[in-house]
Length: 542
Picture (spheres, rainbow, N blue to C red):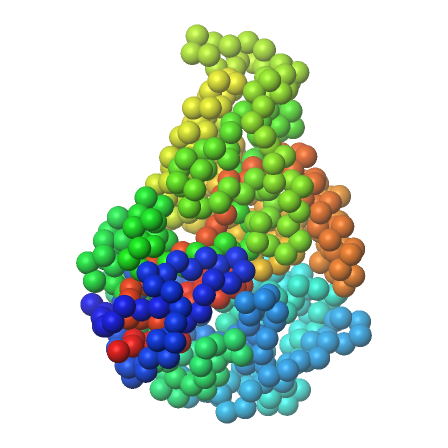
């Protein structure tokens, strides 16, 4: 159980894209003295298969024990972290980072330019590859160079405008090269960083215990304080069931919980400090498999997109707590999101019926479903139950299933376990017609990851729509390389138009990070690159 004290107040009030609901308003009482120590009990949702990896759940953990070269502040600006300053060459292909002196990993290894270079080599090596790091920079990274102990130089094959912003994400945290040399299993269970906490133990299916790094000196410029964490220990518990998770903070067994259930939102705002951050990147969306019937026909994809009232389904399922995000290409909080495509797939049964008639689905069977050449119009939608799609999301899909029936779609909802979804069971083009997913990222450059073509010589497992459009790839690639803001806006908007017009992604709702924090605990905050909870500044007050 965590320490309890007087009712808490947020250290700061609401900022852009962050909603903070307080049981009491901000006041001078926020200057209360912190207790030196205490154990923060945090209840999280998902447990990844390894502590470090390429899923956003790994990034949440990384923020507690790893440091990055740079960080993203509340205004979306890249600020110093391990790199005190940096220069970019005129041709935009060389980045020189000047590192903070005196930093060591918690195993005593110096954090120097050679260590940074070793990390990039490790993350991009085919034998030890971090798939997400590779997806972002594998095509751009040429080599790393340790110019001197505190100067790391990154050479690129071609300009990559989002690079600094990309490096703020937890996947790019710097690990001890001494620890990396131990091998895959050790680094899966107990990676070593230089961050505010170190990993003491991992009890699978229960918790990861972090203890304070007493020698911590390398907090990012946007941290609320410099030096070691206030909390002596962080107990990161895994409580997958949302009812149990909310119950744990209500009963005092947890000080902070992740993903406040929509049904409990109003009560939580009365009792706790509630923070909600709309993460940038792609929203939770239906990614349509364009390579397989019936959705290999753009008319059928468009018909499906107009067959349901997606917005009303989202609002009803999430009680207006989580916003609708109709643009399936980018989340509304992503830089250069184009609102023009937020309502492109408006509910229009007449249009949907006309498109299906045009595509040859003119007959209906006794159950009312469309039939063509003796085949029923029965798309299979795979969703990761409890891993990406919670109870509210399941209710949303069931609502859509009923609405689409009126147009003649016999939608089959197929729940997948976390291990099935992330383990590759649904990675082939014949395994689904549509699949739900999202991608957290602070840059619209992520579009290149999700929409680059899948070619034999250039595989791209992140393109789970199997949509092969060379023009879309060209547009996004140009946007990623240009430094002209106006050209970036034009090109990224064009990419969103193509995705919307061809109905290969139907936006559902924003991916969000929400936290409920018990009174007496201050300065838990959500970082801006992908909504990672930060506990370095968390302090109990008396």
